[in-house]
Length: 296
Image 1: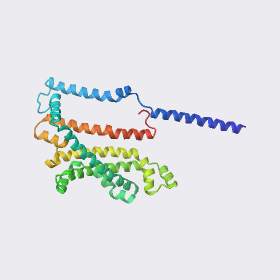
Image 2: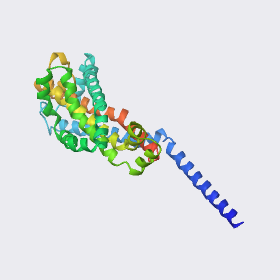
Image 3: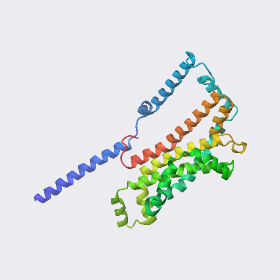
Image 4: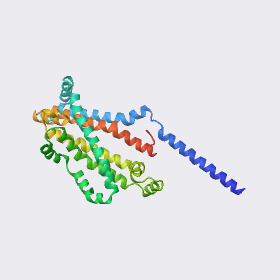
């Protein structure tokens, strides 16, 4: 009889735990009201931008900086945007760089992922090229532009080569770091269930290493974008078109600070937009899938 009562108590406790977990899960997938999203996520950056514009205009209005060749007014930069838009060039600047950057990043992803997996799982390969990858990651990507121009000429191949050399080491090292943090218990459990070789890498290693891999992807995109800007600034040719880096260099050559600021703002805008549209949703999905995100 006592045994029966104990069993009932255990079942009751298990039901309570399950109910608590269900409630927790319900809290995880619940959506944040738009008003709260507006106050917490949209309003702060808008206020920050307004404050920057006010301070910027104050520097001009109070003649703290009265040389337009050094600091143009917000209105002058706005006129530069307006002129580029009316001439139909603004979207062309953005598309030229974004299309190159995303395509180059996809190439780097296709190369860096298997390379990182190989380095993480094969001791000889890790000992041989692991330090080289770390060294390449710390090498400024602008250093690859001159040899890429000599080897490949002034065309898109040169651009993609610079992007690959800048992004592949970051992606591979991010995956290696994520795999190094996978608990050995996961690997043993996978082998017990027959998940070995490529099957184990796909079903066990990569999902468990996803947070570190995603961090590597974000860093890889940052290196891709910076590498591309360096290549566009240094290597200019009519055959390459005018991207954001070329626009920045054109502004410098023309001594037009309003054009320089236009290019800087567009480069920042693209970087922020890619993070908000691609990497932030991926981060939220990873955190939510692991029960680490309470509010969406």
